[in-house]
Image (cartoon, rainbow, N blue to C red; front, top):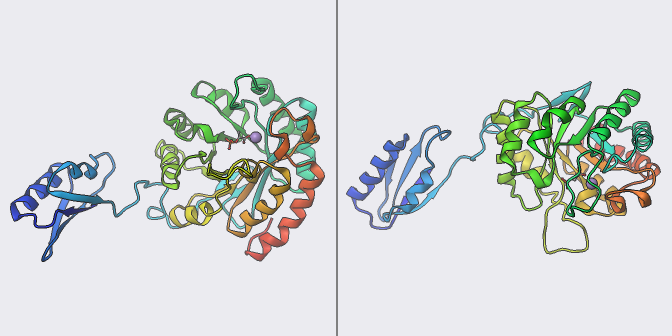
Length: 338
Ligand code: PEP
Ligand code: MN
């Protein structure tokens, strides 16, 4: 941290700040200029008081961090990209990984039908929600454990690993019994108890960015999972809230290169929630791959007009297959495969 003293601060005042820095467990290095003095405070920050509290001192003008507040998620800690591996699928390697399936598991036949279709089109992971976070308490809330059983059956028949959302700490163990990847939804991004709990499980976690979450907050949420002992975190950009109303959310593709610059964790993009409309999914999926996403998560429904959730943004299997064909040259153009 750099502590900037007020203009004209006396030597005594600088020394008082240095003493406080030592008390808080850091080493102070004052740099005295003609008009301004700054104190560089060095030392491991984890588990110690935040030096920004020194801004409360009248002699201090500001305190500026020089390191990122997230540590384990940061490139400063690990420069190599990390890979999440499951059943032969590698997320964060040379191949763009596509996860696809319905928003909600609605019946056994629906999920089996989608699983076979997305597999035939080249998807490597099956998505599907059994526990659904819905804005309205009157909307379909998911088939819960019954839905998890259908997902497990679809995995058995298709061989595709399953990603599904866990909504609350009480059901983490249940969902983990069935899921290959635990999904933390946008609305739970700062449910720190849930993040810690999935951090204690040995399973990969797909962490979706909240709709009003800054990149720094997003990475600090990832840090909760990593610091609980689980290195298998996949970040997912799924759109944020802006003033724009012509799409459901604004898919922040800036987040992909920004996250890649700051972190070693794999990044996937959800163009279904990010746009809210099926005809915008393909162009934004291609854009996501072009800007460096390690994967995509896409909603597919055999009959979107009958879907119990997110029908307007769901692709029919034929449209999904077409998108997979069109994505191949995009991936190859940026040095990846599909
Ligand atoms: C979902 O994947 O169906 C979902 C609810 O996503 P999000 O948490 O991004 O809204
Ligand atoms: Mn959905």
